[in-house]
Amino acid sequence: MIDRVALGRRFARLATDAAVRNPLLWKAFRPFIRRQFDALAPVWDSMRLEDTLASYEAALARLEQPPARVLDLGTGTGAGALVLARRFPNAQIVGVDLSGAMLAQARRNTPAELAQRLTFEAGDASGLRFGDSEFDLVAHANMIPFFDEVARLVAPGGHALFAFSSGAQTPIYVPTARLRDELGRRGFTEFAEVSAGRGVALLARKAAQS
Image (cartoon, rainbow, N blue to C red; front, side, top):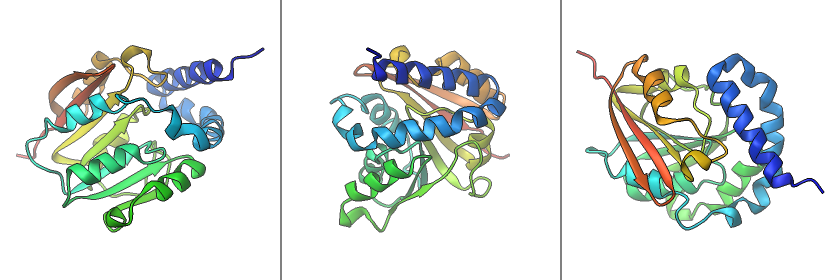
């Protein structure tokens, strides 16, 4: 009998490695990834462990100034976006995901008191509708990074966050050395590596304009 969970994990790693190596390959994987996460949406929240967002939250604690506008990429059912909204009570948060089913659940998960500051919309992280330098923080939790787009969206002096809940065992995972290299070539100059729970994270600061 085919282990569909294990197969899905292997496919997610394959898609991640391919997209990081050559972002043009993402178009071939995109429809399959969308269907995969649409199918997982009804059970996604039940799959989350107590420390799934531990490294994500630990990295957020390293921020010296609270961001005013935040983008949570690959938001899924909104767990990371809810963490952001609660940690930064004056921030506007946008959660983006490829999966419509995940976004529908994220909206159901959002309490009324956060609904004015937290919105969700469909989008492809490889090419988003937002303007250049629009966000003080672009956050990823177990999400494939598209470095050119991240560099475009983060304001000078702003941050990008990449968290992987099970470290190198996370199906969607990029080694820290690769993240630092790709970001360093795109204007990010300060890096903080974080470990918490089973996970790891990298917080990167984009150089401020002189």
